Image 1 (cartoon, rainbow, N blue to C red):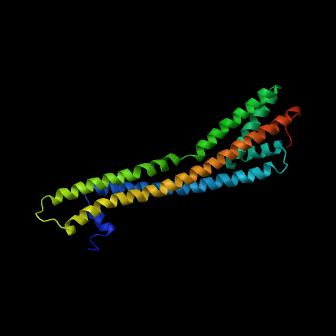
Image 2 (image 1 turned 180 degrees about the horizontal axis):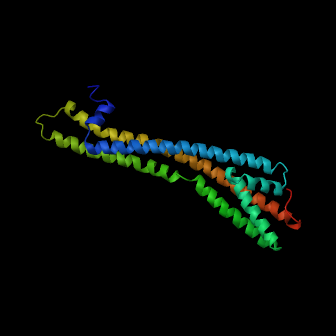
Image 3 (image 1 turned 120 degrees about the vertical axis):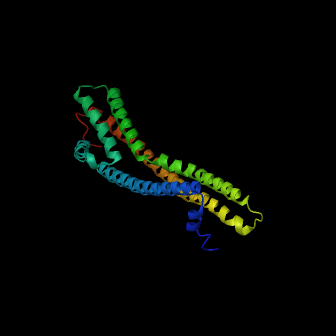
Length: 230
């Protein structure tokens, strides 16, 4: 009985529909774990690069030097550095066009930084919708496999004259495997989604704070020939 009711044995002897559901859920689980590990590494990288640029930004380095460094390091820069570069680039372009209206200069720089911020937010949030889908749909897919398996088991029992627990248990157990695997796929995805959503909110709030702080610095530098310090 122990061998007959092992997980592998139950899946092997299950109906083809239950086997298909189990195979789908296992594939989804593997894909979600891959997405989780990629997202962990991506968020850590974003936080590390933002921390490094934030320290450099407030170290007293001139804005022109920071902008030159950001331009050279464009392929390996972080989200905060790219937002800074977007705002600084637009600010300098407007000043080169002899635009002296402070409102126009600040509006242009803010719009450039907001557009860059939106691109960065979209990139950081990539694959979150997949984890949300796995977390919400997997239990129902597993439940479908369970319902189908139970229907299949009772259909087979209908032809028997005497039904005992020994004859009912294997069929029910085969069906319940689908629900168990559905939960196995859903639970990590839900936990990871909630954790990533929290981390991404913190990153987004930090970037928005930086936009406001940098905007204030640019405003103070409007009276100079070029923004050089902060």
